[in-house]
Length: 414
Figure 1 (cartoon, rainbow, N blue to C red):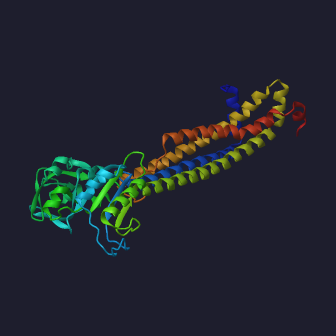
Figure 2: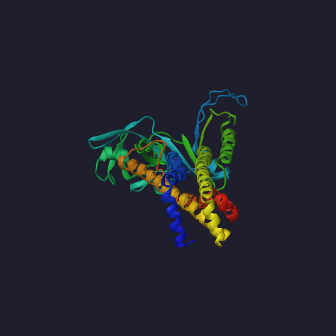
Figure 3: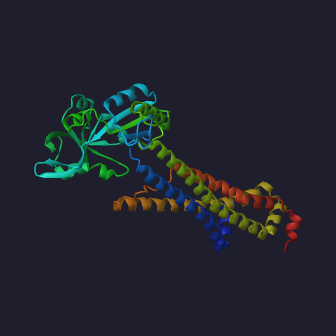
């Protein structure tokens, strides 16, 4: 393997046939380059779409009430369904699949939040502390809402970072008071959000759910619930259980989609996962197909080389060269061409992906469905192993053909 004479001979052969060697190597280079580029672009698309889910729970369900669209047990359609605090307690008590639940109400309309001479029109929501964890809001300054705020109905508020910048500029908002519809709330923190509509979600203000119910005349009302299932329990199973329970409590048909609004994020997440699994398979098929075309080219060229060197191989065998030495010589030349050109393709592909990521980051551009294009270490390692095996396979048939050449016939060849 480390015979210097063999390596010098391989180098001399390549030097003698520069154009042929280059064209042969380019086929493998292009195959690996396209494989890496497709995998990286696919990963960038995957990252972009997954980023839209943000940091929120991937097995969550949003539920809100609506109006009945079908008659049920003698009751006419068009009835407005209204959830209450008792529904929250019933769900906690009777839905065994439930892991966490958080109600959310909104102060009706977009009301102006004032701080001294600054003001901004932002949506104000009342939430329980669990809501922030489940929906993906992350503390930026100060703290988020806690159980004491909820239990004691404190007049505290957490601002989205975009809202905070408008109201306070570069000033630290923690401990200051803002006016929301004539009521003063103490700012205890600000939050940031990643994922879909992050800037828009940072233009919100959150106050304790119990405070909103009492201060803004929404006693015993629940507009929306966010729920997550226990580990190992599909969210769809919990959804069916919730439909049965709420339809019994509010006397509407479980098949009435207008009476109960549901958004199952786990279903959307699984659909996206299935889509990208299909994309990965397609990319590998296309990339490997391109690589195989290059390998076939290498194999064909090696067959030509063997034919050209038939007399030389015959002389070698006549002088005592073993079949193994002949096979190893051809295999080494094939592996060198394939591995080197493939490695250069790997470097070029990863370099281009790194350049694309650098340009995205430096420009500050945010593409809705495209994130950081990348190829992980496992893929790079697999590509390297594939290169070596491909080179060996490409040279195997020509090498065996060379090993089977009979010295007498080789010496007679033209």
